[in-house]
Length: 337
Length: 280
Image 1 (cartoon, rainbow over the protein chains, first blue to last red):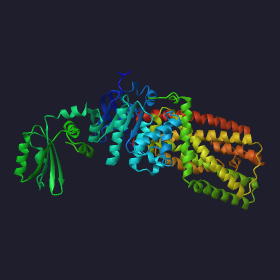
Image 2: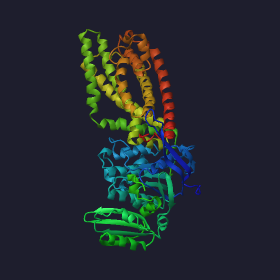
Image 3: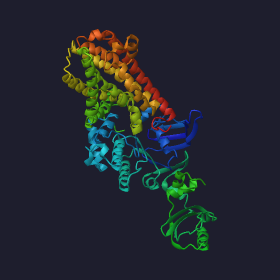
Image 4: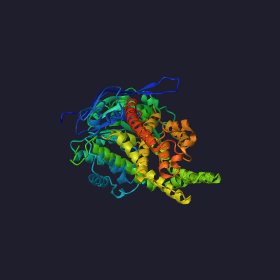
């Protein structure tokens, strides 16, 4: 059994038919296109991509909530289309910003209710609920009505709901979405500790936070417009950019110089411009360090003063930019090349 | 999964009943915490009952009609529960994000629906009982129950058929998506009329009353009125045994229909991606 991957996705495509008005024919939206992924047992695997990239669609397929249009997907060795019941006995799912449960019930009652759907005896369920709530720092909210919880605390409750059934494969869809920094950090460290403790469990996590993917995941697949663009460990993905040079420059305001001027410099792979109060921040991904001289020349030619220059190591954000041609924010804003 | 031996097996009968009880819990316990139910679900129906009682007394109708109205007022609580808490429930569960979690759990969706029905039935019975008790006291209604076991049996059978209908409607409403709200609003008043909540079903005339007999509340209430009031049988539409037979048929049709529609809804939604997303 140990050779069977926790998740196996082969040539998976999902097309949505979006119904138009009465007269218009339904339009097709390709949410996933020829996706191939294999996740081993005990792996914390990340799907990194902007909103609308297809991450949630893939989770829905893997959790048996959505049928693939073509291709094949297996979880714990079972086919999502043919054996959904086998899969459901082995998985759980937590989504970011979900408002599951009932506001009139207390935290304990909500969690107890969900535990019963998995056949956990009440006594054992209550023991797990208490224990996990303590771990996530919600021990004192056991008898608080869930409608009285803040969104951060509510998400911690959801996290407990997903983990208390001790699933073989757990799907976390943007688990820290909308959380403040502290709550997001708590959730991340809880996930990491759980994985360290339960060596035979698998997590598939979707996120559009680079830091989250980098901190948590053993391997990451970068996904955009329904396609997997790259899949490797965060270190190996960043290694692809080892030859590229990434510089962050703080300069005086551009004062009328169009930012595109810098984009057009030969050897600039990607450029971002961020105007601030009294200065501007320019970030360059250069094909090689020598291109920096051309950048500085352009600054001088436009009478822009260099205030600070910093070279930094490539991040997953840079990998995404390298693969897609624009940053995740730009993709989400719908900007094109 | 670390599954201790005392855990219920996925899709087992034990898990089925565990799920029914768990899903009934929010309705039985949680719903009592919002005290506004006393106003909306007891005081307001009692106002409607009072209006009819005053009309009947003003025109000198037999006192049995007052009893009919009190009983009808109590039974409206069940219809409201069917419309707003049963039929529309899967739609609301989807909006809230619970539906996906119910589906990915290793149990039958019928257990979830039955839990919703059982919880709703128990919570509403409390409301209906209070309406009958307070209405009976206020308007000095004489209840003469010939056989408590027959009355209890008829009530249970009515509930099974009624909540079976609610379970069937819940899948139907989910397929209709946001139209569900309008459908529920649309179905409220006509049922008040055709179920004979505030008058004997017989008054509709044979064919209309026969048509209305597909509503479990209509036949169930008619049978119960015959069992509770001495002059009930003379005002009854059909004999109690025939009405019980109709209720048995309705129960089977609605429960089988609920199961079929639920499976159809799940298949369709998984294929089209409508299960968790209201955009498509």
